[in-house]
Image (cartoon, rainbow, N blue to C red; front, side, top):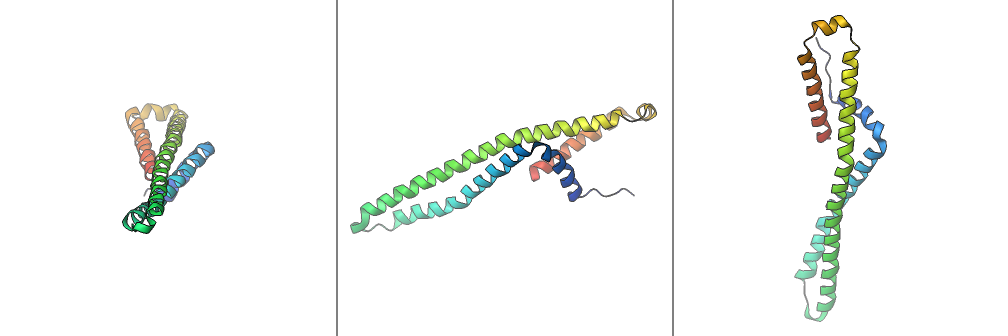
Length: 146
């Protein structure tokens, strides 16, 4: 019976490779957190904008229009921040994914090449490459899910 390879095993395996590019990983997580923070505060400022536009009293109209402009500026700034931080997080994530994928594949082929000549002669090369390719796909799916 085969040993089961679970989520924890996959997370530890990928984590070892990700820790080799700590500064990229830190930048990606930091900018993703900032984009998420902007996304969380966006409805708050949208609500302030709606409140400023909905409750218009004639005697306080100038103050309310000023509040509406402030809320609109905050809404635009938060929206812009969200898109900028999300784009920057992708700029960090793409090198992480490509560097990690390259290292995983190189390590896999290095291990295969260390096997004995008898194993090399008796193994179908296409099956080995297929298994490595499936491992690449599994890493890609796992990393995108995380």
